Length: 189
Image 1 (cartoon, rainbow, N blue to C red):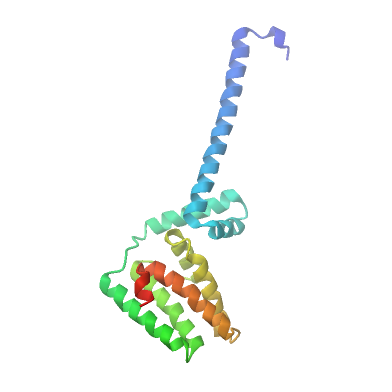
Image 2: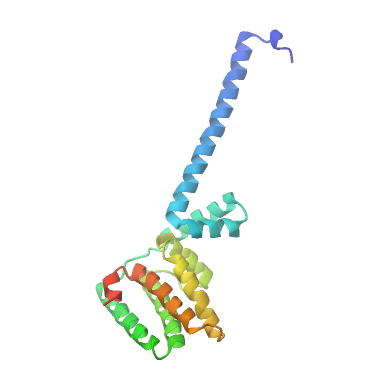
């Protein structure tokens, strides 16, 4: 290609196309960075990284997180009624009291109570990973506690959890319980 043979108009068109392409690439990068920042803020760093690892790439992981958010938006999640909140808080207190004499049973009861609270809020009672993914949309800072507590509860069901593990599970579960019920002062009453 001989640049001297090109007219001024043709050179102007080439420069304009180049500017448009560079501008489009820059805009795409800015939008991608903004999307990443929004998703990381919405889901928290740990859940964001988990989704990327599960997706195999940033694009697939972020698409999965956005799909989660859309799914949960369609679920019509609701806050607990005052009566349900008080009932669940009372059950939580009883489970905590039973921990002293039967830590393993208390952890299993806490696991079930959390599922009951989630159900009352409108989350589907599906397989654990789907339930955790759904809850992660609205409770990103507590979801890691749910995962850790549930992992200990699974170990307990196989007789492989120590008393310290069970104590940690209750702490993890309490964090999510307080977040789901929305009244931390009730859980500590």
